[in-house]
Image (tube, rainbow, N blue to C red):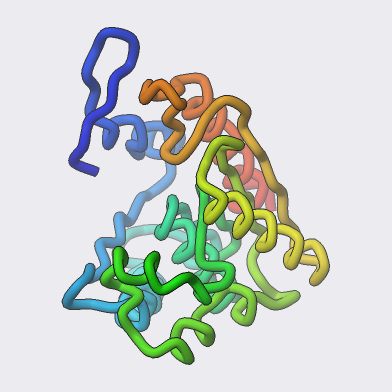
Length: 215
C-alpha cells in the first residue's frame, strides 16, 4: 500500500499498519503473494495466480523448512475475497483463513461499479462462477471475517452474506464487526483507528494459533 492517512497530527504510511512484523516475531513464515493486476489482468487471471502461489508453497515446503499442512491465508478487501477463495478451493492445503473487509460474495455488481474496477472487466458468467457464493462449500477452511461497521454497504453486506453462508454450511467461521471504523480501519474523520487495527491483528493471531499451531 503506497498511500498515507493521518494518525493524530502525524502522517503515516498505511502500509506499515498492515505489516507482517507480528506474524514474523511469533515464528510464522510469510509469503507475500503479488498477483497480476488490472487492467492487464482480470479476476480470472488473478485467482489463477493465487492457485499457482499455493501450489508453489506446497512444492517448496521442504526447501523453505515449513510444514505444508499448516498454511494460513490472510487478505484484505479484494485480498480478503482472494483469501476466502483460496480457502474454498484449497481447503486440503490451507488450514485457516483471515479475511479483512472482504468483498466478492456475489460479483453481480452494478455496471457503474464494474467500470471503476478493471479486474472485473470480464463476462458476467465468469464473475458469477468466481463468486464466493458458489465457491464455498462445507469443506471450506476455517475462516475469520473482520470488518468495520462504518464500511461501505458493498463490503458489510457481502461480508455478512459470506458469514451467513458459511454458518449455513457448517464451516468453522467467526465474524467480528468493529465499531467506529470503516474500510482499512479508517474512521469517518479520515484518521486511522489504531485500536481497531491492533484488535484485528490480535484476533488474526488467535485464529492462526488455533488452527495452525494448536492442532
